[in-house]
Length: 204
Image: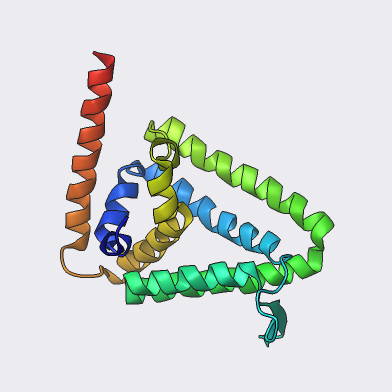
């Protein structure tokens, strides 16, 4: 995937929009993705510092370790802002909030309890999302159809950006630029039609 494609917001949304067109499936993903992100950051809080000289920071009364969880948070935050400044800032803020709160929860629970809570949450949220695809969307998740593209575009990052964009659009009628939602909708419909035609050919 080229540099231009990596930062092509329309392409990201069109690709995943084709796998998340059913309203119930969309709501299930919006409901379950952030807990998935949060619990991932909880377990990553137990990883060692990535910097030798500057490894810890105190923020809002919380003792935070600059580890893999921080690096993941920083990477997605920068990526969000590069894609779209307004929605990206909201997404970045939510990600950093998850990192700070996740670190606090990890310190409170301890590893012996935290990994069990994280595993249960991941299984529950993952099951909810697969139900969304199997029962309501009636289409396999993107990672099963195109693992590489799904991995590069980032399933969780997409859904969290969707959450940020959807929230801004719902309350402030925001879109990154005029015609964004209409363009993406047309691309999604074209992608879904292509998939349906291919599926019909396999049946016949």
